[in-house]
Length: 302
Length: 225
Image (tube, each protein chain N blue to C red):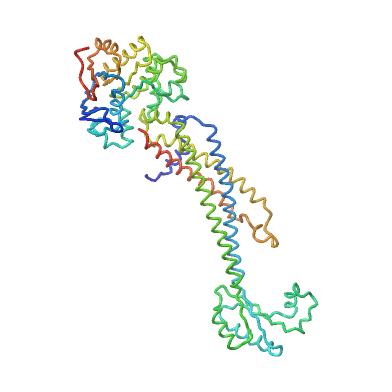
């Protein structure tokens, strides 16, 4: 099939009123098609929101956690100060480390407070010293740093957070994939529904098709009457569905720290533009499905 | 224009027609007769490309039917007007729109055709019924509407399958009259009918040849009628 040019596309939407009248109007399959397109678009909005939100989350978690690391120095009390100084010196020489800072006693106490209460006599306990490392964008070579530290600061343990980060990013990416699969399934189901509806319409109009064939109508002419109808129905149904879905997403509670990732479900900024993609996509799916159904049916007729 | 050469047609094992050769000359008038079930309708369907022969060759306007795509057949049908016994219309459109349907599907429904349409409806005596819906027409009116629809594209050939099957003698005469007039205008006509009176009535007005299908073959019957 040759590629339709712009004029052909315009003609498709403005339509040939004569050709449209050839097929009798059908009230109830029309409403069913509209409804399924709207429902599928509504679901597609949520799948899209899920995919986008988890995508953002994966990037955020990856970024935030990837660019920090913690060095823990466990040593006999009298050596801690010396080892901390040595570790800070090593870190200051390590490429990829933006800043390295030993946490003060108050900060360490604050970190432990949830577990031991605020009145912890920190000085009396062999608490390891923590050093917070912030990486540059390029990051450092964790393996090399570990080797060097093990030689110069025997009590140091480097934690680059990858233990936490990896499963989280992995989970977020899986969710995003799930969102994508849901979108594909939704549009696949829409194609199936429209194919069934189109087949029903073609079967119901067998006499119309036979008459049109007898008086010399080309298959393309007959198919177009059906294709145009179903495509426009799918577009308008999907438009209504995406508007309602968009409203529903907008009315969800805003992202909160306490709520975790679920409340982050939604669109941000330019992400809302994705909603505009749904109706034309539904139209394209309906066009393809009806075209296929019509051509297949017509080929069987004399 | 329509040529059949050694055509055979079989449905699921049994052969209905065999070894049929015929060349429809421009301007000729043929009757096709034979007992019902002999294959008259099948024969006509072969002539307008609704069926492919099981053997032999059918040529429409110089092209082998087997070489023609679906669109080619659609285009050929614009030059062949077909009238069926149980004629079908688009029941939600008016008689006038149904008659103009061939123009619409071929993109020729321009304003100057409007006059032709009125004239044609007057010719078949349906001017008053132009805005009626097909289910409201009587049997005779349906046949005349079908004839008008078959000729509006000014086709070269008109194939009619038992056009008088459902209508009374007077109306049959009128329909025959219209077919004879078309033939005088140079159209090639083929009428399948088992009504011998109709054939006798035509003989006085037009040089008609009578073809008879019997025992799966096509015979020229003429003198005995």
